[in-house]
Image (cartoon, rainbow, N blue to C red):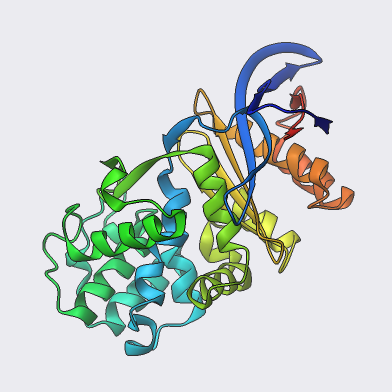
Length: 317
């Protein structure tokens, strides 16, 4: 790691090598912040803005943990984990989403997320857990169900208020757009995303601590077998929390130390964000060499003839 008095530094480059020859390149920016929002290290520009996408889900889950909804419907840690998830539509995951709706006396037809292509139910959509959690809050608070995805709906205002409070920003300053599932997501600087995950990992908030516990105890609910978030948390129990987002977004928190990492692949490539995550986690000492090797075999060695390599390092500010 290099030292410097900069607010930005050279970005990272991920190369796809085919039998050792460069075939493709991805440019990646990454930031580490502490729970006070201070940028500790950076590759690229910490002020680069992008949509947080599904990396927002642990914070959308605060609507559930902060309103008594868990207690009202006797929801478990497995339920809370699926609420934070981008799942694969596996049977056990779909059943967990259904369990939330059943306990809240809600029919699955109230879900407004899409039906995946080739599937038969919105329950199988990767964001259905998040939607079920929002609907359970609406049911508990006697809020309307038919427009729960509207930006001005009380449940979305509740989520926005929680995020704004954590980042110490006025809620009206956030730029909101609809994610593919229909729920609002927000434009954030990479430093803000890293700060959120530092706060999530700090263990200073009971509502967020419950979310961390659920994700760590049930990593299979968060993504699925063979998926990066699940495999990383399974290999580092009680040490890291990880959540992917679409278009090259990846966020990770270092539990107990109040440090958060955000990653953005500028062309949106999924494969590059995992390679960079492994590279940085090893550089920071957040994973052991054996964990790094296990992850690299799954996410950097892409077959008999091709592999990924990461060029560059974080600069400590």
